[in-house]
Image 1 (cartoon, rainbow, N blue to C red):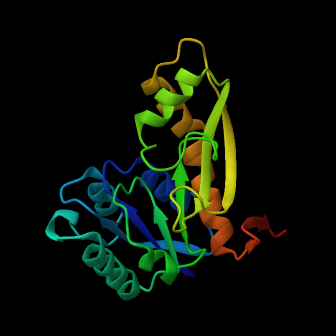
Image 2 (cartoon, rainbow, N blue to C red):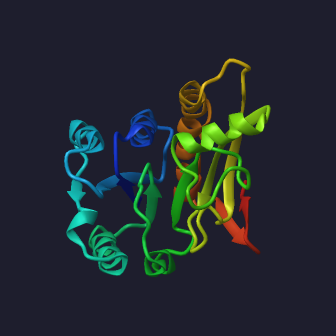
Amino acid sequence: MKNIVVLVSGGGTNLQALIDAQESGMITGGKITCVISSKPGVYALERAKNHGIKSRVIARKEYGDVISYSEAILDALKEEKADLVVYAGFMTILDELVVRAYPNRMMNVHPALIPSFCGKGYYGLRVHEEALKKGVKLTGATVHFVTEVCDGGPIILQKAVEIQDDDTPEILQKRVMEQAEWKILPQAVSLFCNDRLEVRNDRVYIKK
């Protein structure tokens, strides 16, 4: 049984999707053993508490620089014996030393079809604002492994979502979460926990 540690910074809707998938039996081979927040008092911590999941707060503002904060996160991940680290609305950039310690063992969900609308500065509503501005007909979500390149890691799963003519960024954000993010993130986690993901030449292959 693999230990899943989830990193959060806010409300924790993606965390809730993972918890729901775990409790329904959709995630097998692993269990969320700890939730780590970069901020105190966020609702994601309540979600963890409501489901009996251990949580820790490692507040970014208490550390003078990225390196010292990243070292604190890395120490916590080692203490929690993390097999898989999941970014679920974790809004803090970590130093490369964390990624190097967990190659192909950290995953993130991004609210667009990478390589579109991704990279530094593309998060939250801005992703959906840019998609609407560009007039694309399809958007969606991507689960990928985290590497030293922002949103540049090997793609695990993607799911497309249609854009409607009267969409606002807020409406589109909600549809992408409900139709794509909350579905493919638990799927990717379960595939990892069952040793079904193989990375070759920066591509992810799903083993039968």
